[in-house]
Length: 196
Image (tube, rainbow, N blue to C red; front, side, top):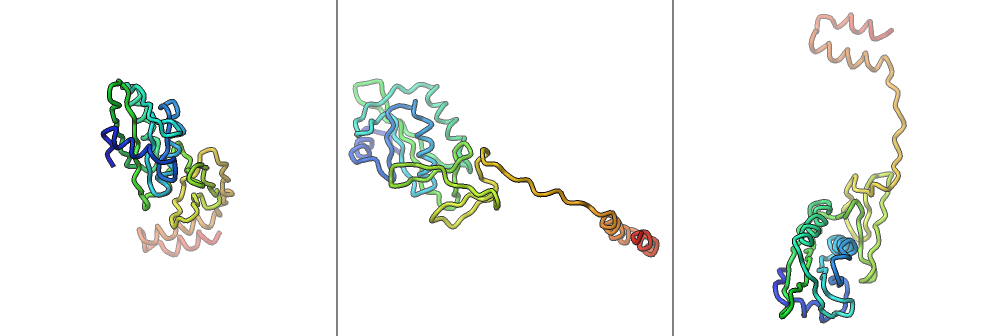
C-alpha cells in the first residue's frame, strides 16, 4: 500500500486505532512505533502513522534527512528482513508531513523480531513481548504453525549443555576407521592397538 497524499491519510485516520492501524504523534515515539510494526508483521499486517494524534487528528511533523535515516536504521533492526513501505504525505499549506509505515502480512516469515524481541497485538491495542522457550530455543507464538530455532531474545538466559567426556578408545576407533580406508594392510595392527 503506497500512501502518497493527504486523502489516503484521512481515510486511515478517520477510524479508531485498531488491529491494523496505529497513530503516533511524532517520530520521537519511533521505538514504540517499531514495536507495533513488529506486532503487525506477526499478525495480519498494518500501518503506523507518525504525525497523527490518538484521536485521529492529523498534525504532521517536519521531516528531515535525519528523520529518514533514523527510520531506515530502525527498519534494518527487524529480523528476518521485512518488507516495509515508507510513505510521506504532505499536509497542504504547511511544511509538515505524515509518515506512514506499512507492513504487509508476511505469514511464512514469522516470527519477526525487533531488536531481538518478538511482539504481538493483544485486544487490538496492546503489544506484548512473545514468550520464548530456552529448552528448544524456539519462539512459540499462539495461533502460528511455525517455530523458528535460535530466535530468542538475547536477554533470555540460556543453559549450556553439560560437557561430554571423550573416551580414549572412541578416539582410537575413529582412527581405526580412518586408517582402515587409507591403509587396508595395517588393519590387524590398528585393531590390536585399539584394545589397550
